Length: 191
Image (tube, rainbow, N blue to C red):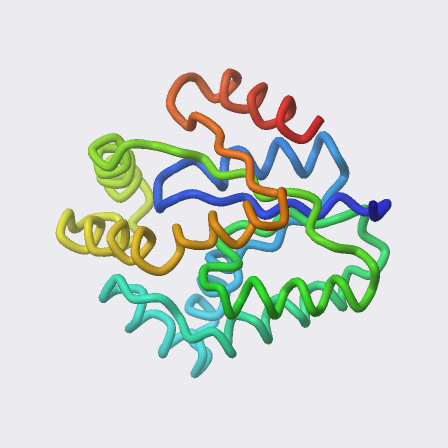
């Protein structure tokens, strides 16, 4: 087992990945790699990547694998001293998971576990509409776009459960309840 703690934090939009990753980062001294944050930074900076990403995100689509993989690789290389990483919103496809494994296994620092926050769809919609009302995020203000994002997750991302189960690294976590209760479940799953 690697000395580094590399966690894939998983769940559909609105499952609480951002909230829980903050706790895991502080508790274990990890570096947060959020593709959402990286993409929003590009959008805010109005780069070409940001403009292309905004069009896709506003339509509820996923950003192309090669763009996301390149961003993650660059961020990992910028933090070689890290005790480990929380991958939040990545990988989203089997190709991304295989690319991540290849990057980490080449350094003998494999994924430790995949923690999946499990939340019913109606709760997700409620949470995201609430977040959209306060955050200004356009992809959280339209119920149709929200449900499309959840379907995208289910169709393209949820199958990664099988990928990580085959490696005995998948751990499903009940993502409903108080933030503290969910955090406790995550810590117990990490061991």
